Image (cartoon, rainbow, N blue to C red):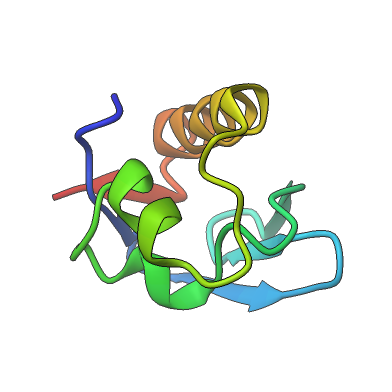
Length: 88
C-alpha cells in the first residue's frame, strides 16, 4: 500500500482543514475526515507521489513518525475501499 498513488474519485472534492482533510462525495452525499495534520494537502491526490515520497518532500512534515504514517496509510486504504479515492 505504501507504493500507491492516489486520485480523487469522480464526484469527490477535498478541502483542507486545521486537523487535516475533509472529503465530500456526491454519492450519498457523505463526508469523510482524515486527521493528517500538515502531512497531506489536496494536491497529494494528483497521483504524482506515494505517501512516503510526499512525506519526504513536504515542508514541515515529519516523515520519521512511523505511527503517524501508519494512521494516514490506514485512512487512505479506508477511503479507497469506500470509493472516495482511487489508486492510479
